[in-house]
Length: 389
Image (tube, rainbow, N blue to C red):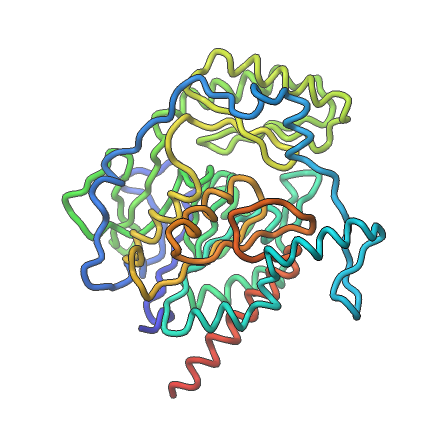
């Protein structure tokens, strides 16, 4: 089956969705696969986690947890003899040893494509640190024109989704491609095709129509938390406004408190104030990313479940001829890596220039290598199609 002929692009909405307003591409249709329906239980029930969770902040201490999730950047550059070099030989040695466990997806490309023969690839990617570099100002995390062109091209051949901690609207503004599926707020805000089963009407899945009359689904499993998130957002804005460099970001179903530009001696102040605000909200939890504190609803939903949801939406879940690939760089991407690894469904690719434990199978060094990998996928797929002519 040729995925290219069935590709179904999606547009993000920039305002609240109603029955009369949702701008999505007219060709939004699920991938055809006989017997592909949504599993009944997954969509009808989203179990809540135990309340009162402040995760690693409470157990490790704010400062230790913030430092451990935000290690200093280690610059590793290419050379001609070994592929990589570093000003710190110990760091370089550790990285080369780490590559034995998480080999480069570029050097292992033939292995990946050999396994992909006869299969339909579905591609999922994080945004920050994967398609764009990590920058001091999160509002300026722009992807390059070359990266945008690479993503656009790969989406012509494979169903492609971006699953980000950012709000869905914001990540769409950065990417600006209608050929993709978008999931914001760590997968808690997804636009996708209508489900196959008419009986599975999830209360948090809004069925709407686009301008051409095609039906689409907006899935928001944390919709009930929006008023609470807005309250916390205001409190965090107020309590951090005197901390130089601190930035509070509204991601609709979650809140990010960035401390990348905060003097390290004040990190504990940031952590303390965020912790104090969350004491009054036991249904919210606190996790860490790279120099960012993430406040999210306490529900059993993450990027891994978002991948499963999108695969089911496209009629591609539990199919032996489908190979999902997820590319990401941060802690929240580990949930997606874990789903693919545990189910032996596909490959996780970690974007990192320094050694770290991961549920991924392969690695890429930085967004430039991600772009190279995407271009390689396009060349491989186009070559396969030409050989069939």
